[in-house]
Image 1 (cartoon, rainbow, N blue to C red):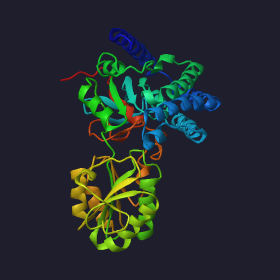
Image 2: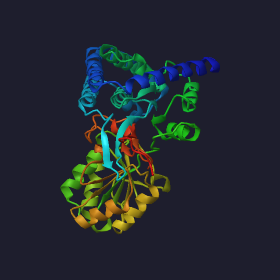
Image 3: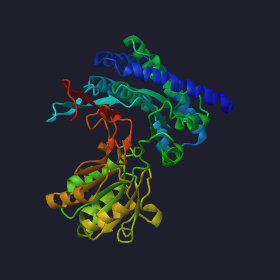
Length: 421
C-alpha cells in the first residue's frame, strides 16, 4: 500500500498539471482538438491487439474476484467493441466545437450588446468502475469541450484503461496539445479517490460512472460539485392502447439486448385491461428468452414466473431479471414510477396520444420515451457521439452528458464608451 502522504502529493501534482493544461485547452482551436481525437482513434485501432491483451488480464482478474456476469460483460473488450470505441472518438471529433458558441445575444437600450457564449468548465474528474471504454469516451468529450480531465478507472479495468489512455496521449502529442490534458491516475489505491473528491483548488466537477455504492460514496464525500445518477431503475408501462407487436419487440430489446447498462428495463407495468392478452404474451416471451420475471400476485399465475417481494420494486438488477406488476390505469403506473423510479429513463408503450402526453407531462425523469426501447438512453444514440454519463439531477446537466453539457458560459459585453446614468 502506498503511503497516504505520497498519494496526496501525487494527486496534487496531477491537479496542478491538469489546471495548467485546461488553460491551454480553453484557447485551443477546433481543428487541433479534432486532429487529436482522430489521431487517438487511429492509435486505438492500430493498437487493438495490445488493448485486447491488456483487457484479457483484467478479465482474468475479474473472474478470479468473482465478478457478476453483468460486470464481466461491462469489462470485456473485443474487436467489435474497440471498433465502436474508434467510431465514438471520430463521432466526437466531427461534432461542432461547443466552445465559443453564442448561446444568445441581445442589445440593451443603454447601447450595450451582450452575448452569452459557451466556455469550458476547467478540470473534470471522472471516477469509473469496470467499463474501460469510459476512458476513451470521457477523454474525448472533455477534450472536445476544452476541459482537462483526470481519469480514475476502477481496479477491474486498470490494464485496459492504461492501454487506451496511451492512445489518447498519442493523439494529443500529434496535434501539439499538452499531454497532461488527459491524465490517468496511475494507482489502484482507493486513497486516490478520496484525494480527488477534495481537490477543490484544481477540480471543477466530478463525474462518477458506476454502481450505487460508488456514486453514493462520491455524493457523500465530494467537496467538488458532482454530476451523477445513483441507479437506472427503468420502467416500461404497457398501456391499454399498446400495439402488441411493438410491445413485444420493445420490451424484449429493452431488457435483453444488454442487461448490464443503465438503460436496461428493470420493471414492467401492465394495464389490467391487457393483462391476459398483450401482457401475458410479453411475460411469456421474456421467460422464453431466459429472463427471470418477478411477478406480482396478478401475474404470478403465469407458469415460469417468480413471486415478487417488496424488494423487487425499485431494484436495479443489471441482469436477466425484471419485476412485473399489473396496474389499474395510467395514473397508477405514474404513481408507481414516482415512488420507485430513479428519474433516469421511463417508457410508455401506447397508440393513444393523450396517454402519452399525460405520461410525459406527469413524470420528470431525465429521459421519457414512447414506443422505443429504453436501451436508446445513450449519448451516442442521441447524436452526441458519446456521453460521459447520464445525469439525473436538475442542476446544470441532465440526461446524457455530452460535450455541450461539459461547458458553462460567460457574458461578453460590448459598449462604445457607454456609461451608466
